[in-house]
Image 1: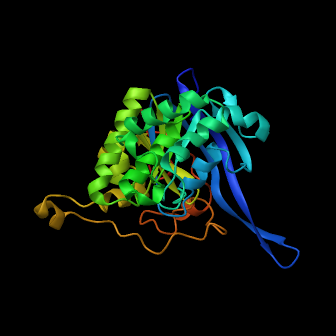
Image 2: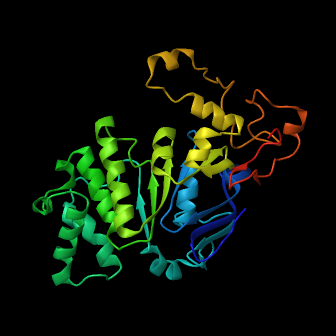
Length: 327
């Protein structure tokens, strides 16, 4: 399904990330968790690709593989024309300045005793991107860029609110002028009243700076709003990928249909009459996934063939990909 060209920022091919399960004093391997199980996708320049699914489906692991915080078990990750899936750490550092990351917890990912200015300036120092005289001006510029007052630079991060801490983390992610930013649940720990402000800020920064986003979240309405295209993951596999409008109007995979049916409707009359698809059972253990289509154990439309072979992620027209033999 990959169609790499000069407009491609990220091309992921046959990506697998398996974590070993060990037991005993000798830490003997007795199995493995298939967190990411042979996935393919492309992110185009200046695009936002949303990655959505239940907890434990492999979304965060995918993002960390792209950042090379994890060394993939197999597969390739092509970043702006360079395969970074297996290059050594010393060669990876120059490329890392072109990648930014916004992680989930605004409280756990910042040192509460470190000054905000030092937090933002640290990437600039690591990559030698500013002299001592330029550093203060650059940090103040980043503070203004994310909507914070530069007069607060000397405060420790523990004195800031959740909204302000998230803005500090965004400023830190943008410090080295990256072209790609991995947003891993960037609003899930924030109050609902603040979430819209952060989403608007991310959209403004993308338009102003020409950023490319991988937006990871469990919140499907937010993903549909901010993303140009959306990939739905289930148990380590991408089961549907389409533009956000197409996915909302014409979901084809039974799992995607169930996710969309659970979104509340603001019309009380429509909310009463709409039908919510209830999935049976729980997500299977990723250490022992079911054969064939991983979703067949919970699918209301499953037939015998669903448990035999893995359905390919096929194009059903207009760039809409789905992994289901019933489609």
